[in-house]
Length: 420
Image 1: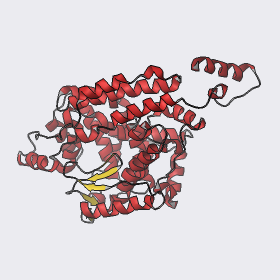
Image 2: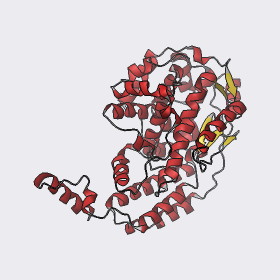
Image 3: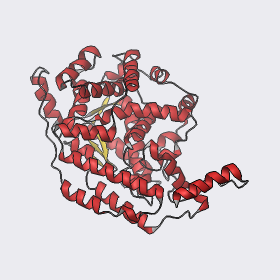
Image 4: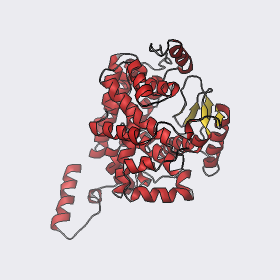
């Protein structure tokens, strides 16, 4: 029925004076209850695990000390948190979901892709610390193209290897940063009382990350003062805000994320750093180095060789290079880190072409599903974003946003960044 309706829509556009704005105007706009039931079932399964958290070493600080003691010559041993779910049981439940009950063709296709993507994520849980984990990662997150590798190397060439912001003299401890982060969350809570997320100090994470809307911070982290605002807008202003906007949607998977959402989400988060005035050249080099490290890992380079490349060729500090390489090699090989720069590149082109940012805040979705998201907004199945990130309301974001809308290239973008 959906395909016939689309054919009729094309016919009206070409051969009649009737001009419906969307092919769904030729049929019912509402979605049947079965769609929401199946969405709930898929969301329930995907919410039972956090793949990124499961793939993150729990002994990050101790592993660095071991690596240092070896003279940076021997890859350290990493440990991971136990998987709290039974993968085989999750897969059984996943394929018991009756997708054939969905009559809406667009939603049926979306759910089939979700089912396949969740299946891959569950397989990766089982494959941690084995070569198979890398294959699942390549399927789920893709691999850097030659073009993206060239752009990454361009960034590394044009951005100085040393800059003022590498100094940690003016920095916040993890506890101090947690206090600032709680204030940031309270800013949203004052406007939306159900913005009920927490900040936790956790030994079993590296750096700062978001899981299920909560901000997790390694207790030994130190945050440069120059990066505080940017990290808050990356983690809270993007990841937590879109989780909240997704959580209030009728389709629950807009919060947990439609499969493949990471590229848009991380590109948007890096843009948030830029618009808030906190994206530094050092940070840009890190994003580019992740692409180089992923490509080297995929080509078969061992952990220590990639570490040497980053320290000797690209002049990263030992601690920073360790962080970069560990993120790429964790659990057997994780290509996810290449999506940050790839997402930013896509976003610069998207905004230059007149794309709007509001649709990207509805929840967590990949580029391929943007047309469907817009259709569901038009059909009033999805709601417009309730929370707008703080950085978009701040006056200094406007001039930076205008530069991007006029067509700023990645090279111009990188050169425009501040030293500290």
